[in-house]
Length: 425
Image (tube, rainbow, N blue to C red; front, side):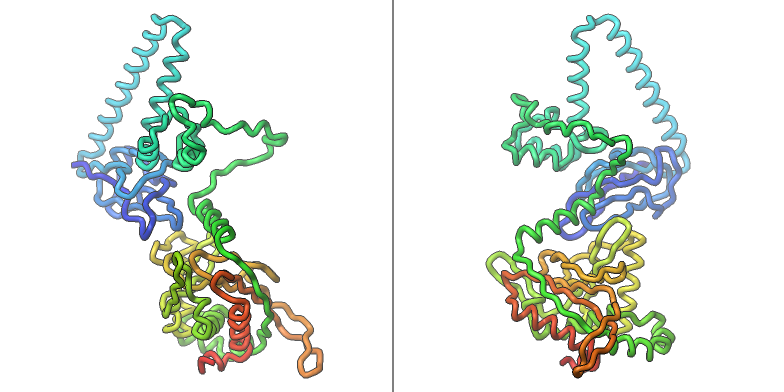
């Protein structure tokens, strides 16, 4: 019995993925629930497990290819005789390929030398069309394009969805009548190409780049700054760190204080927790706080759901869990969607000051930075205190400067006097 391996549901608004890696080769034995293939989407990387034990009978989509939800990835031959069946199929395929090669060689000898390039070009064009993913093929057919005339930028010269969209935006130049127009102008030789390394951008990295650029292009983004004295929070952590960790099994960090402080400020300034939807402003009476995490595959922003209902311990446990799963590539789509406000801590990498970019469709993001001892004036005396710069980037289309500054001042007040958090002041 043959069992199909299909692309699972990928999550909200995600309809396409890229085959990043096959863990098994055709003919390898597989066990039920064992990971077979890794798919990379715009937001997460996920593994597709085997639904039954047997042998991997076929791989229908190569690494680097794009696939849609429900598309066939390959098949598993189930049962004890699966390995023999796959071996027989492979031998049959190899024999057919050998025979086809012999026939082609004989045909080549009998044909004149001049038509050969034309036949070769026709074969390449046909192969190019066959290797189109379902999404790319649909775009090509809907816009009456000649796939063979489109210059592919994918693995092995395959035509990607981006290649087709570029042609469409350029006025559909890559038709059968004008194939040469689809090819981009050559960049020319690079002087030190032998000392350079080219690595294809991951789907996640490309999506992050698109979203960040989209934020800059669509939002009227401004950033306001302030600085906060971290003395009170650091003293609180020092006093209760051991007791807290012993009771809750997790360390007391700075992020839980900032999450709580932001919720106090968001309740007072609801525009910072809102978003623009068309010609309407959507005010959200819930607080799902995104926490930016730098994972090996790129920047991700997992979300703390209902953060206002979580205790300090709950927040620290959730952040630790999300950070660990981000590093292991185990985040799900639900972990990454639906945030209302984001906090980014560049201070863990030593950043002293920066202007964070909005995470659409959110209207604001708070940037934390490195804690550094600096001299400041308190009661007409110069004292040295552990200080941190804070940056709030916001969409000026819906958040006024007064609201942005007030929000940041409330966060500063809560951090410098943590009792305000408990009293919601």
